[in-house]
Amino acid sequence: MQNIPPQVQALLGQLESYQQQIQLVIQQKQRIQVELNDARKALEEIEKSGDESPIYKTVGTLIVRSTKSKALGELNEKIETLEVRLKALERQEQKLNEKIKELTQQIQSALRGGIAG
Image 1 (cartoon, one colour):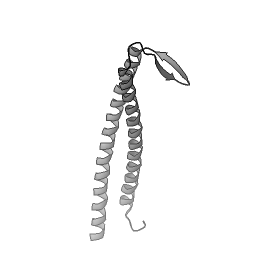
Image 2 (cartoon, helix red, strand yellow):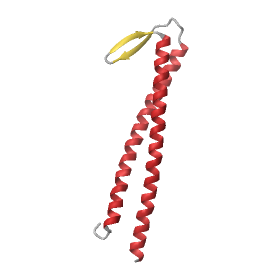
Image 3 (cartoon, one colour):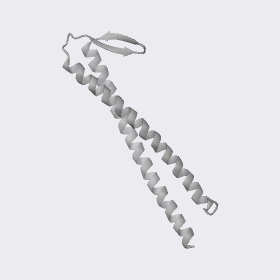
Image 4 (spheres, helix red, strand yellow):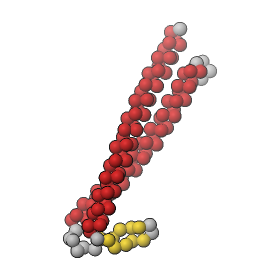
């Protein structure tokens, strides 16, 4: 590390920071995808049920009865919100990947310049 110029060390620090950020984004994305899949499965099950079938949902530590139409509305809203969050995380991941690629190229270029010089 002592032979690496300070500007390259700074770039390496930035790169490490971006890599940590992208790991967090990926973890958040995975959690959202699991929630989205669960909500879609629940929606599918509720749609299969009859209009008079009892529907229950969890609210904190309680389980309460709900109507089919209310449950469908809430699930559709939840799915829409999760899809928006997922798209935002995907855009964030893409931007971080681009920054990582640029930084990697800068580091490689700086190191080649240092080796050649």
